[in-house]
Length: 405
Image (cartoon, rainbow, N blue to C red; front, side, top):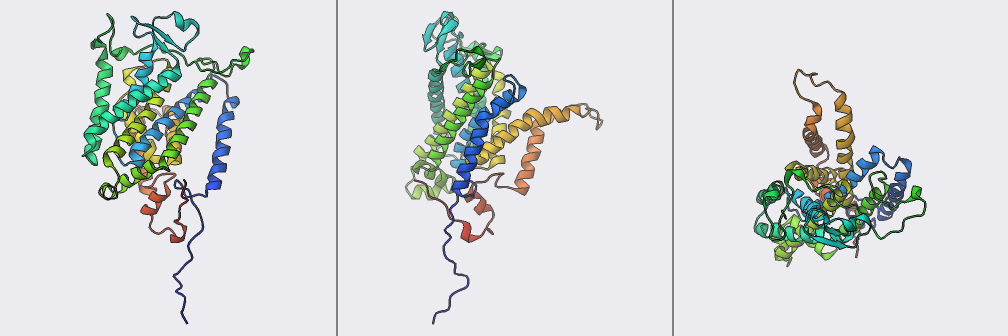
């Protein structure tokens, strides 16, 4: 008579999402509740309230962080120059939706007084597609030199690419283009101002008081809903890519490049796809931000911007879609409220030093990351796979995943 081994256990029937380990039905219900609250939230605040402006900025950062997570979190390619794609997306709006090229007189899909202004004025949706294409080309360009590089060397190349784009943005007013008498590449430190407001093919209501889709600086609700729509679309695309064959190839590349190649994963295509997709998403955020701020300025594209977005990805959890969303919202709101409002009340000579604590913003972010790396190295909302790797003591009966097809 065989004696059952007490260590033998029946396979677990529990299913967990690849992101956080919670049951899929719970995750879907939670997402539905959060989405409904996010859609209705603007009605709780004044249309020009400061919180609305901060929320719009936070949503733009969410899009940026989701794009960087494709490159760093999924494919494991450390990118320190991600701000370059944000800049390319912003300048696409400056080139194709403003009067910057005054010698031109092109109007595509726009109405109103804009049709009387010289320059290139295309509808924002057209410009958004153009920005994605420009950024995808930029992503492929940055991906080609890194095909045979790994680790820190990839970081150095991407850092250089980001700085090259910033230098071109700062000095672009000295670069003459081959068309037009006064056509320049950029406006340098002066920036391209103003940029056309968004015009969407959506109905305006007869009552001016309820024009939900009238974009302007006196009513920030349309900007918020538009940014939220872009976030939802980005989430859908990123999740579908993560669960696709390409997404599995990215994860295999991240875990072990040699093993992935031996299993037939095309390394060149896989890396280039990661850079192209991440760049396109970054371009979407840059294009939206440029249109929202109605300006494109080279001072926006500093190296610290890339580090800020990377901190969001690390804080939320590398490879975790929902973790990245949490990290982006958290750091963005800390940057908007905690640092300016709380530390502004602290006297600058409290410690006998002549500086203001508000100047130590990135130092504070670094301290927060240090705490997270020590106490929760997998991030606030980790990917289940990464959580298991870092905590081998997790019950083996709870490590099954739901396979989505």
